[in-house]
Length: 391
Ligand code: LMR
Image 1: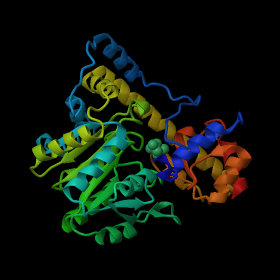
Image 2: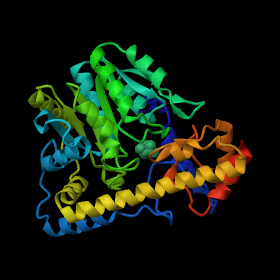
Image 3: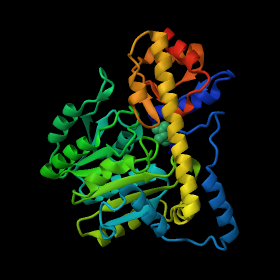
């Protein structure tokens, strides 16, 4: 039977992880996959996570199943983290999922179950796995304009025009904050305008929020989503703890649904989808997050650490923008300092990206997306020189 398999299309982020690992050069630089790194290039376990894990190890006396929807305290904690008080908790249901990708997959399947003819509109560009999963599920995909290559900002007029062309019942996937891959984000006022449009056209928002806390702060990064949640009748949210809790490999995420009044129905569908795809979601990381959220001291320490990660990424952004200004003698790359989140796209061509990799051992995704946290604080001038040299 295996002869019937076809080679699978490669995910460009995963491909790059493999290429970087296979490169024998000692001075290679990984600006690829979205993983936070400290000044020494390590991705440490966060302080509060270590302490919560120690507590869990001491107190856990069984490994029996928790429930199809996972740890409900965790799901409610995620609701609170993302939505704050913007919508009554009685209107929100959700499921714990294996990572943010698990949440995205379950939500796509929920949409497919409820409204198989709907088109899911994603930003152009978006995280590559959005389109890949939708296509794999045989769902209809639309793309709305998002990034203006000329200004390296959001093409908001183009975005609104394209969303206006969506049909009633379609789903609009928005990045809650820290747009991946561009780093260009809509303002809170623009969230308001998108909300109006969605409501007037009977479109359902789906939010992918994987970098809360890495842009302008934990609360600030959720402001647009909360404004929208307070107004729309229905909303879907895929939230991830991979980045802001540093729990990448433990696979911690949540699929949330804000409902008009079909909470029980939606909850049942999410439980069934979990059952059919993997049964019970992995417990460890979600329970660690629950311990942190429920303990004022651990929570404060976690928030402080997220904030210091955010600030260090902002400093790296301005450092690189300054170095590029000096090396290129132009303001072409000033947008790097204005963008928010873990990524920006430099706007290089594929041959330029290839040359950076081949000649300098500098790895970024083919569309010239780079991981801000991977920037070397003491090597920004060299990096800017290399970028200037391939222009
Ligand atoms: C990324 O975009 O680099 C991260 O979300 C990791 C991934 O799974 O692609």
